[in-house]
Image (cartoon, rainbow, N blue to C red; front, side, top):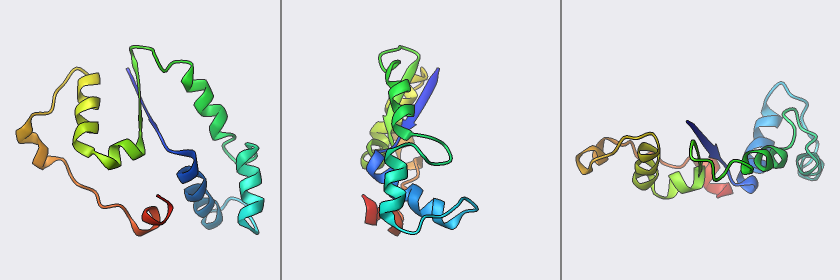
Length: 112
């Protein structure tokens, strides 16, 4: 079974921009320059849109579950329950307090 965790492309673009400019990868002189490269799949790992289109072919496959980062962030308990059910397990109410509540970082708050 495959769990595919996807991220809203808007959030991905902003996060990737900051990552790109603080890593050993060639940085961009402006957001506009970066965004054009992002939209045209001209980054080190290619196009996120091509990646999503490829996975979308399997969206109804019973052995593949797609869930978004935003869905998990908005309701961690429900997201964990869905993932557990997909893998043939379950989460009980007494397990809920043990699921860590991760605060959203200040950087992510700005882009969400």
